Structures are given as structure tokens and as C-alpha cells.
Amino acid sequence: MIDSFIEYFSDMPTLHRSMLLVLGLGFFFIIENTFPFFKTPYNKLKHTGVNLFFTLTTVLVNFLLAFLLIESSKWVSTQEVGLLNWLNLPIVLQLIIGVLLMDLIGAYAAHYVQHKIPWMWQFHLIHHTDQHLDTTSGNRHHPGESVIRLLFTLVAIVVVGAPIWLIFVYQSLSLVATQFTHSNLDYPPIIDKAIGWILVTPRMHRVHHHYRMPYSDSNFGNIFSIWDRIFKTYVEVDNSKLIYGVDTHMEHHEHHNLWSMLAIPFKGYKGHIQYDNEEKL
Ligand SMILES: [Zn+2]
Image (cartoon, rainbow, N blue to C red; front, side, top):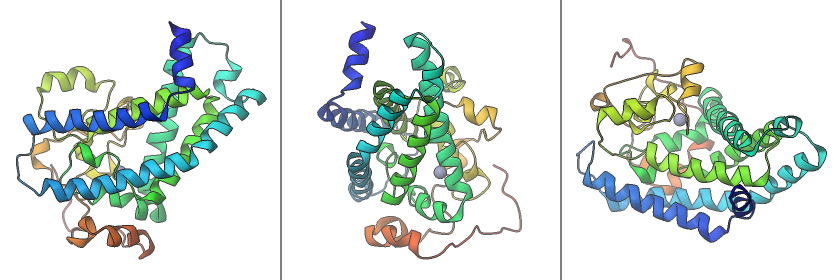
């Protein structure tokens, strides 16, 4: 059983990965439209079109650079580099520790750094300009951000000493987690309480998409909420008070025109707007 699990993820077919992306989007799209949290109408066709364009560029960058992940995984294995190569752990522990650390380095740290370093923020803010968060927003990343995230994944592979099967397991979980946490799904608070101790939930991640600081600099987590709790970046806010977007980029073309959005990182750093009063949500 464990052998076939490892065998499958060591050579996960591209078709299956694409199916996970499409079926995941379809699944969350149906349930978020059946039980929507924000009920404000918006042009879903146009919104989905923009987000699918950036999802496709994300897929393309990851596809073109996938060989870097494979080669670095082979390298850590032959050189016996990284935590899992130094500790002789059972597969289940390798899986748990590996996925946790891949999430910390390849996602939480990558995300945190992109909020703190101005030239990286210029790429990441395209993800934040979305004014109607739904499941299609999950992979709305500028191609430059996709490259930055991939570089962090390489660091994670070396630190963890990640075998190929672990990389594919992590990426599959991360994909579904992203589609879930960005969804406009309304669901009982008890479910949020039950899973929110360990996993990032939509209610938690929505706060990160509020249009102004300091709320946009909180809840950076991807799969696991524990990193935000450990590093004190965890914030709870009544979601009905949230306004999505980025205060410096609220113009229509800055979140709807593909060419404008692709050019944003090269237009200079706008900084953060300084308000007279700090907002208390
Ligand atoms: Zn962010």
C-alpha cells in the first residue's frame, strides 16, 4: 500500500495533475456558488477569464521549470543532503514532517518575504488586486511570482532532502488547499473552529486579502495555520467587514486589464498608503 503510494507520486502523470486542477476548480466553483459568503453580484465570466489567464501562466512556468525540482531532488538524494536523508524515519513521519516543512519554506516563507521586499511585492500584489475573491483567485499569480515561488521550493527541497514523491504529494495538497482557502464558501463556524487549528480556512485567508494594512500583512499560511500561530501573524476578523483589493491599485485596469497587470512590477514601487487612523476591524 505504502509502496504503491510512493510509486504513484514518484511519477505522477501530468494528466492527473491537470485533472486535479480542473476538477478542484469545478468542485469549489459549484459549492461556493451554491453557498456563497459574499453575495454581491459581479461579472463572473470576465473575473474568471482574468484569473484563468494567470492560472495558465502559473501552470506554464511550473511546467517549464519542473526539471529544476526533479534535478534538485535527485541531487539531494545522491549527495545525501537534507533533513530526511540525515534522519532515518519511517515513511509516514517523512510524509508528515516533509509536507509541514515544504509548506513552511516553500509557501509561508515565500509569501512572507514577498510582502516585505518591495520588488517582490510588486509581483505578488497582482494576486492581491482581485476585488472578488473566489476559488479562481487561488493561482492568480504574475509569472514573476511563479518563478520566485519555485526558487523557494528549491530551497525547501534542499533543506528537507525531499524525494520526488514528497514534492508531488506536497504540490497536490497545496493546489487543493489554495482552491479551498480562496473560495467564497459560506460554511458553519463550527467547521472553521474544528479544522482551523491545523489548516488554513477560507475565513482565515480572506483577512489576508483585505485592501489595506495591517490586515493584508497577516495570515500568510498556505496549507497549515500553525505557522501563522507560531510566528504571531495570525489574525481573526469578522469577514463581513472585509474589502478585497490593494489600496494602491484600486483602478479598474489595474485588476482587469491583462497587459496593465503584467506591467505593474516594472512601474516602480508605490509604497503603502499612510492613513491618519489605524483601522480596527
Ligand atoms: Zn499575500
